[in-house]
Image 1 (cartoon, rainbow, N blue to C red):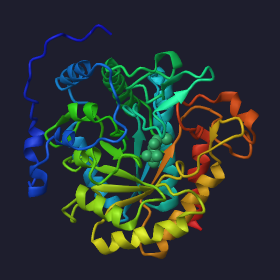
Image 2 (spheres, rainbow, N blue to C red):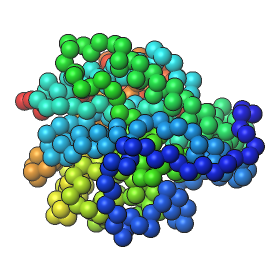
Image 3 (cartoon, rainbow, N blue to C red):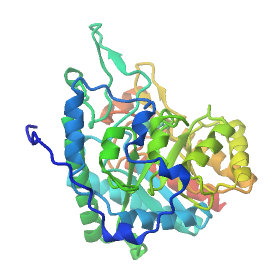
Image 4 (cartoon, protein in one colour):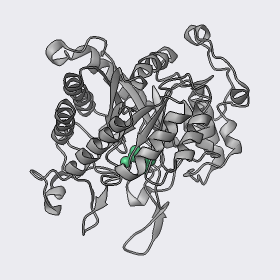
Length: 426
Ligand code: PEP
Ligand code: MN
């Protein structure tokens, strides 16, 4: 890059009027929190940089850059999500597993925004309530991996691909490079700019979306040096909402410590091995004040066929705890499998099945499913199986472009929400 100045002056983060107007009630719990208090805890999935000083220099530079979202947008999202938690609105969250720096192009972003808008219209019609679109976009650049290394056919051991904020998908450029965090910031800014442009300049279809002039953004808050460098007071200003992954939600870990002090809405992935006690303990940590309805979104990703046995005890324990989170279903991550040649894919039918099972589990306990979380793109990719265009391994090869997990194509993603909408209506 060669863009980094060599010396930095520490500047106090600018406190905007909007921040001052909001009363944050400090509790003992929050008092020990700072954007960097996570540093005293163990961070799972932390990236090992060869040059740690270079990382700190980059973070010092990031701390001086302008916010990507406003605190007022975060507060507005909180106010809307409050209604979701109470069952009066719904969320459709979607986007790439790992956004690519190469996809920061006007048309690609526009199609992603339009897909979410169309999905929200379909769901609004089916559910008879407001549906809030939320992009996995403008910052979804860091990935957790089950195995931090990969072995090439030559026997050489290299770092696994960890998202474009960390390294390249090119096997020859896998060394984590802190300069990529700066690129990530500027690509996120360009994406935000494009989202705002698309939202203002393309007419909403059927004129049904007043108030939906802008798309909220989200990403996994995995890379804590980056996330905390973009945190001012109690706001992570790199996205409207962030989430903690299935692999980084340890109760005594750095990610929970970082997230618990934020005003941003926070998602937490909950997989099939999570216990009811564990989930309630995470809610206690992230939202000690139980009156904060919708502050936390529990994103369950159990896998179809497993929902009926693992989800109900968790729902019951949360109900008894007095917390009122949003319940969201990610039907993608519990249904991934590899073909005989090792291509990662998912069946659209399995995704629909998990959505239905989750919806029923909530209904039968007097709880409510408040949202759907999908890996998808506006492009015509062939990464998931749909029983029509993509039925076998050869079909997947036609247009498989994902850097990480398989995404639903535009058509598959629309099919899925339409089917789910029909199921709910009947
Ligand atoms: C993801 O959302 O891409 C992801 C890694 O999910 P999970 O943390 O649920 O495995
Ligand atoms: Mn994924």
